Amino acid sequence: MLLLKGGHLVDPQVGLDAVLDVLVGDDGKICQLGEGIEPAEGCRVVDAAGKYVIPGLVDIHVHFRDPGLEYKETIEGGCRSAAKGGYTDVCTMPNTKPVCDDAPVVVYQLAKAAAAGLARVHPIGAITKGEAGESLAEIGNLYKAGVCAYSDDGRGVQSAGMLRTAMDYIAQFDRVAISHCQDESVVGKGVVNEGVVSSRLGLAGWPAQGEEVQVGRDILLSELTGCPLHIAHVTTAQAVDMVVRGRERGIEVSCEVCPHHLFLCEDDITDDYDTNYKMNPPLRTHEDMLALQDALCDGRIDCIVSDHAPHAAHEKALEFELAPFGIVGLETELPLVLTHLVNTGKMSWNRLVDAMCVRPRQICRLPRVAIEAGCEATLTVVDPAERFTVTEDFLESRAKNSPFIGAELCGRAVYAFVEGKAILANGEVVSQ
Image (cartoon, rainbow, N blue to C red; front, side, top):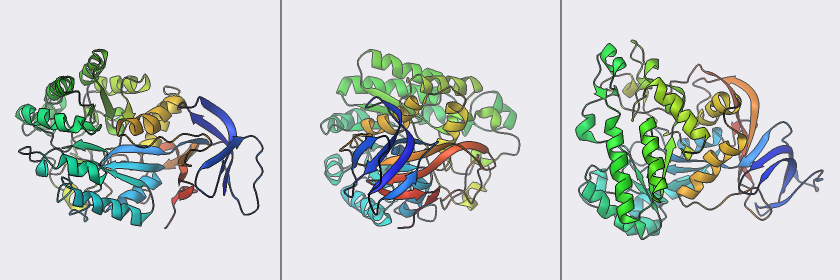
């Protein structure tokens, strides 16, 4: 048995916001909430006083590179990164090698994650074969194998007709189509936001419209097909407004935002051309950054994701134009949100739980996790006051490509449990 003593429990799903004890049975389920619960003989006791206890964190947008690109990251390494960040569940994007476009890759990923025994992995299947945009992936076989959603993340489906056909199929399985909105005919060879900074640095610009054109297109296709739509990594105020207007018309459309788009902007890219600031989509304007923060805090943006994208050091050491897009982020995601939004009073704990625990599960059709008797004890314990500096050693990932190394942050996960089993204890990943 497990007893969490004196933690501040927050779960808006059940109207919970109180200091209570949580007793977990040997079956991995919550059996009692209350004050002054006494541990039985042999019960493990965790002192949660001064800490917050919330449903297990979920990240529905990560890249674990396995199979095929294990020199960047492995599923086990990705699961360790997730556990270090306090994440109990992650959804892996399909742009592996081979692409996750048929059942065998799903089976492989699930087996590797089960062997790791840390965060649970929920594979996302590709929309088109090889993410090439030319023919449909095995939508039905992927569903039977257990995918939680479909996406051609990393590039996006360029043909509106192909996406329309795919959404007709996806809608039959009550799954969401996750759209990477990048119109290649508009974006071209862009590597940073098009504007003053791209001109100053002499780098090819990536206009905001290259994202927004497809946001609008895909919302209309969702309306046409009835397929639920989720917009990946929004970066502009205009994109958020388009999502809101779609919802107002009754379309089932949601969206996510990444910490790097919340807390960095194009102005952070200096003339040292640090490729850790190169991501897809790119960092936008300071005004967009502030607008994204507001939209997240008031619920117009549904959830927060890391877009955890490991790359080898030699790849990121290339010239800015040649280096790959992306950064790692699972370990720093929660601390950044706590430091800049929650601890400053801009975001409530209820909203944090909704954005990082509740809505992600709903969007990707994952089983409900709540802090109530009878529910699985999948929980994250957060110390909002622990101060630390991000170092390469802090990152569990094989890759270290983060612009936040050296940042001084306040707040992090210190325990995480999956069905009552600890995967993070005293801030360290539990070896399985």
